[in-house]
Length: 542
Image 1: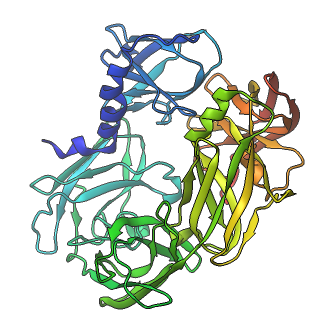
Image 2: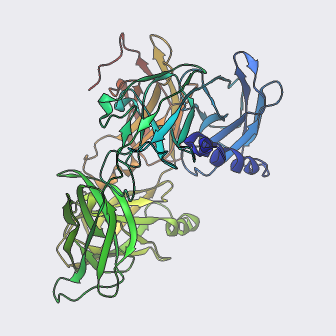
Image 3: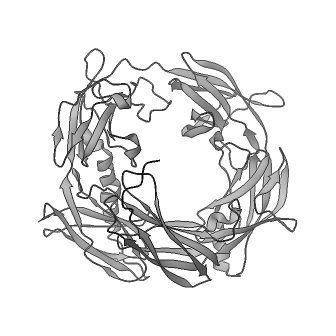
């Protein structure tokens, strides 16, 4: 099988094309639905057999609908319920002619017929070549990535493929632009696992991104002979140690631990290894590490009081031994979650779908901590294994529920509750409100149309709320659709400051529009019109 099928674009086809096409055949839901139709063309001619996907971007993001264009290039998707969607075409080797792979955003607020949602495609470019090692032998199954000329232009994951049994790779479906091509497993340019891997090397044999040769891609172009010569495989090292009880010094077996890379003294990447377990002697070992700075942490387990501070270490030119992770009994917070302002039993029952998370202010986020608890039938929760510090709460799977107050013993704690090391705190009340207000409207552009690749967002921030308050879960941001429409539902009663922000391609500096205050009440929908002006020239990069 050609290695190009492993490209991200082909994966996109599999995930959002074939699988969801079957989903589109399900019976129409009972609630009001819409139809979406349009035409797909290539160089002005009908494009038959192109999959058009409609994927929900807020709420139930598994909701996806699809259709295939007919001989005239037309498509029609029916039974689409209200929601925020992204509409994209899936056509291997082709890209949008406006040089944007985001697709078209769409807000459906009622039963309507959205027509003329058209797409114009063009054939993308190709970069192909061969990857060899220092002895001139082909490197098989090696990762090859195409980066835009400036690293900060790479908003999305760079196109990736792998070499075949001849060491040959082929990156296709590339939007027009200037690229630097690199091969090597360490493509994220940070320390990590690289057992038997090669250091990231750019065409033709450059170790630094800035030294790589530029390859220009145009519509349907093919750049051949982009060959990359790699050096010797990187030498990797191991780190080993023990997890012990801080008081007794005895080994702690069967503890889940993970590893993270350190980018700077105070900044760590996301976890690069989780799910490992210490053996019966409390020992752990991690292999395949390249030189760099790391932290090892233990992963909190539900209902377990065990915790430990992360242990930092550095790999230079040898294995690291003798690491000691000391565990202790952490603090705990228990209480009840209550719904304010309603006795609706159906809403009360939905509280059990929520997962409650705790974050401690004095706990570095790189510790890998994910302290959480499910909610019991009576609204009870308990979160164990916490370090000392100020504890705040957040939720997942919360729908339209929002935390409005944190209480204990009749007192309100707007910025979290203080917990001492090992303290068992009980009697906490998390008061929730169910939001049923809506803000919808239109964003109008002055001074022209939104440039290709640009995007608009609307943000709603509650007025008069402390920026450090736990109630900020009520603040919302949504993307404006292709027609300039937006909608945010599930807002709690309050006064909101509503503003539009525009992001232009090839710049990270946003353009902000005027702000408008809106009063939201339960069950009511408020419509607003926001205006934002295109700048005379693109904003400078920061």
